[in-house]
Image (cartoon, rainbow, N blue to C red; front, top):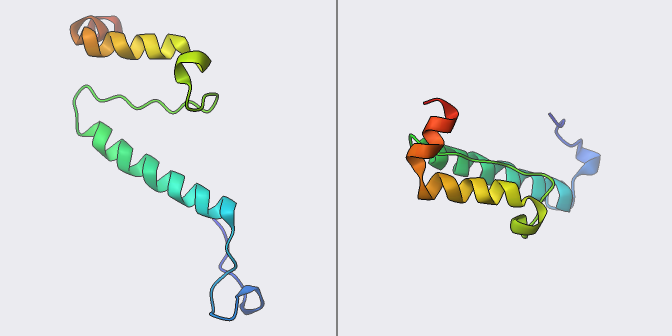
Length: 84
């Protein structure tokens, strides 16, 4: 956890200076939280976070994309594979 800024670290308006990385990480954590809540609201919900992929998941991790399609097209088969 980050410590609060000291008075010397604040700008003229009493706010810490803008930090793009901190802003990005905070937005990402919030987005993951919201999507996680939505995913968990479904009995068959699944959320995969893949650090090694960007927007082109079909190129970066094609096996995950194929498995996700299988889960949608044949949810009973996916449940059997998972032992549910």
